[in-house]
Image 1 (cartoon, rainbow, N blue to C red):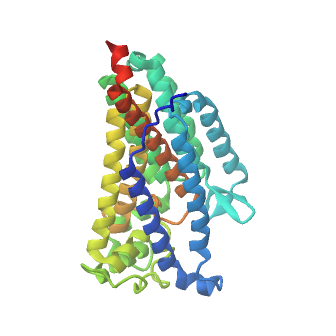
Image 2: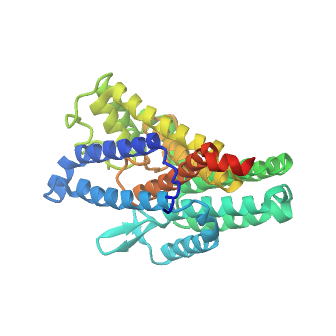
Image 3: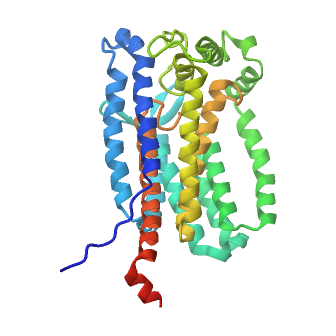
Length: 381
């Protein structure tokens, strides 16, 4: 009789947290958009239905990525990064302009944002490249320079769109993975010194970015201009108080807070569910990131450690930038809130990334089962 192969179970807590966040996002998107789209499209389900389709596609993608052994992505890394570079170049040439930026490729009635795919492609590529180099990462010419060239090309194409928030996210991902990979401290200091003037140039190189920083420092002084969205967001939190107005009873989403279902959706949560609801969502995010860190710490190989750490850094940084912008503690960067903000590309990225994390946890648990299996004990003896 043939023995059944031992399969590791995934991290069910991580899976539950993901499904909870997506469900909260679906409910909040409908609440935030129903009144506006009922007037605009004569269909209150317009955005919620579209997000629902992406949620179903995201679930399938997540389970597929969970079933694929995570080490398989190491072989696909060169193809993924070349595809990402090609898509970013394509969007700069034929991308659909929205609010002065070319960040989307339109296919029929749907829009695809290549930078979302590029985020995961960069993480997989850097994890593969750094794990292959091992101790050579401490060498600038053979270790760090090839990484900087790839990251530099991606950043250049992203700033052509332009998308400062995503460029900042890419820098954070690259630095985190380089540090974990074992780069020399002196090289990191030189890299940091070189990034400071570049970031300052990018931050102050355009007048609208300067206006964002000025309105961030004094939003009430610019309440009718560049600070309008932030002020309306703060009004939403103030109106919600401790317990909120109740689901569907928020006011700011009705033509006060622009695009409330996207980047500023957390303000709707704060108004309708109050401080308690907002803290509950933050707790879910903290637990999610904790599960991701645990996967990184318990992975048996360098590639798995870097892959999990890169995914956690990507999602964690997006959470930080979004919540900071919505609450006025950080400048507005246009970063969506993972799993919750409306947007198919972002949701698919987060679900695929979670699937890879679940694949890593399956491998961890499989090794734990094998270590306790009687036959494996005999082999070790």
